[in-house]
Length: 414
Image 1 (cartoon, rainbow, N blue to C red):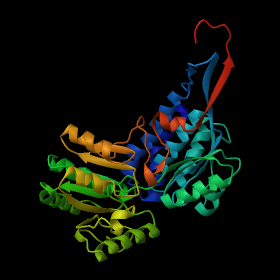
Image 2 (image 1 turned 180 degrees about the vertical axis):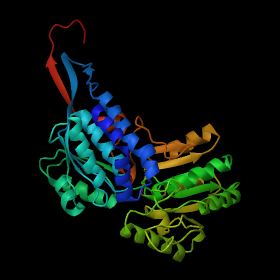
Image 3 (image 1 turned 30 degrees about the vertical axis):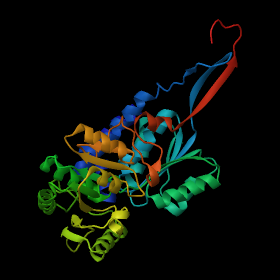
Image 4 (image 1 turned 180 degrees about the horizontal axis):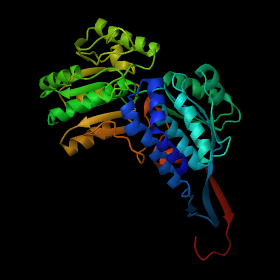
């Protein structure tokens, strides 16, 4: 695993270019962050591979017992197109450390880096048949992984709609275990005492990072009424200055959407917002006449039951709303079928703790956003799925717990 990580670092330019060509990701960001993170993730789990321990149990009867953690077996990984490298390694590194073999099905829009990672794994000495990459379409290759009788678990990251299909296939085949990291519609809550520059920067990055094609995008931004007007002015000014263009240009903040289908889907949601009476503050359309570029778009006066508030858009669109009280914003933040992430900005630690414990989501970021780390478990509540990636939780899900029990006789203590 450590040699695999070394080879990733040696081939960083090619890997970053593959994700930029396939998925429109920023080359500079992939090279500076996402590809190096794949290497550090491998090393993180390499360090955990020889520390997988069970427990000795204190039994209530004359029995001695302990637990073993054993590899779950063959794992089927199905990953999305928005983060080809990051999600590939989120799945592969802990499964490798757990001692599992695996079949990886990358998204049909972005298979190139996964195939190159398989090549590097072979060069690193990982035995043939341990990491298998099968490129193909979801209804064929993905369905085969989900329903195959010799696959013991499926770990899926993608949309809630496809997650349902994966779970059904797992249930009707060999009842394989399932881990699902699905969609999100994350609230970002900004209180009156927040620093305006920090708040606008985080809010903008939270929804425009990777051109909005992230499941934890802070697409519902709630700002307390005392700072709302000034916040809106600063935010719109920064959004208008946001650079959109060639993802190989180091000065660009936002590249093209992944393909025509996603591009047209996002534009259709913008039209929904206009028809439903939301106020368009900036953006609202295509940028230029070539390529799948969309202007950073901010709506305000958005109704809580509108389509752009309820659906995961997966694009550079923010719904900006005003709120008055803490109780009100907690209720509105939880008024969603999703529960992946949330952000809270305030200098009041009591308020931050209250809101964090009240929001139904798998990860809460206080005075930060997109703060993802190898040690921190990541996953959802509600229709954002179940199971966790990263941290030791991300390792343990690829392990069975086996209990071993034997009688003891004439023990001086129990």
